[in-house]
Image 1 (cartoon, one colour):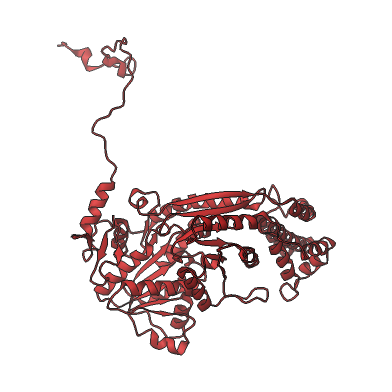
Image 2 (tube, rainbow, N blue to C red; image 1 turned 180 degrees about the vertical axis):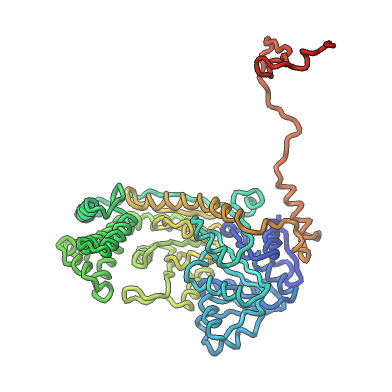
Length: 583
């Protein structure tokens, strides 16, 4: 059922209200809060309602921070549709510093990138003293030296009674990181809801996740064999020296630990550590190359070798010696004119073709971890009937190839939204927060070990209607370990957040006293938001059975006689019945 939230600062009929969102608004107004909701559950709608209430109270201005220019643009467009009386503006790195100084004073709602906020505060272009609400989208970035957390710390220093709302679908499974987020943002409460809760379940679109096991071609396995023998010989040597200690096949984590041990041994004066450092560095490069071949394909491996061979990209002697090795020289010769033969590429083509045949109006997103894979996938899709594909990559320059500037990223997304393109082939830059309407199918070219990235990628579909997620897993490769790692971390995430939540100083605020200015319109009926939430709580409350209909098995022939009191006492102890009739 569609319930519309009304507020003096909201455009009437523009926000579809849900009880759990209003509960989140009520709690957020009681103190700085971390909001953890599943993707597409309406974190942004909570932000809109919070902004409306703050503006209604006439308490300063609102700063909305999003990690990328594309997200800033999306939030700005949404706010202009939702909030009336106040014209929201955006400020990003594309605005010159001299012009930004005036822009900060032109609106009560400003959407900005964190780098701009941090830099302008440091340069005395921006004062956050009068800012009363700071909203942090994708708040899991609020750690380390990220500009988002630095901006929040500046806000807490400048604003006396300001509120922070940090919103994310995936704060992480590491309790140290979640604790850091809460500590540095001065979070007093965590509001967390799971997708399978009754109050949320009816509102979330169905999302079918399917894992597809893909065979690695024998030709690729043949190319990998000498590389595996090489890396195994290095690891076995380092095991004997006590540097590599993990069991099982070589892994990047094991090699990283071994490198730390080797470097530490050098500090202790062990000259053998220099040889270990060089060998382990070679093993790391081999590990990366093997994984490229097995999980990405010929094109990705070829470009990886070409990039690492350039002296300006890798000036280290270890890499130079690596490329002088006979095995690498032969491999590069074999890959030069080889067509892409990895079965993952053919699987992507098949999935895209099948989806568009089923529904020509579908929109599809294909995620890959590496830019060279993105390029090879886009080329592989060119000749498919009905496919109009476009790349979405980051802005940094890689291997001499320029990325997409923020303005270009926004243009790509607009064209995808409007239907000019129906297949978006993207790297991690498109993972976070972007509400891409009607993305019916998301294909993971490979699973990722990070639970945050997995949740973000999966959230690009099923936002408005039922969607599908296909995860391609190369059989017998690290893909299988990545899948298990991500699943385990996602399961641990909710437990971790709940543990941190219990340690926070403020308890859950549930009396609904902060949403008195909100009402719900259902057809012609208008009720207060608090009455609506109470009704929803009651309707979803578990029902207790009046009668226990379970049958109890008894033996009708069993004689259950009177039990003597002496049976309940230690042997030899006297009871009151022993004195019955005594004088």
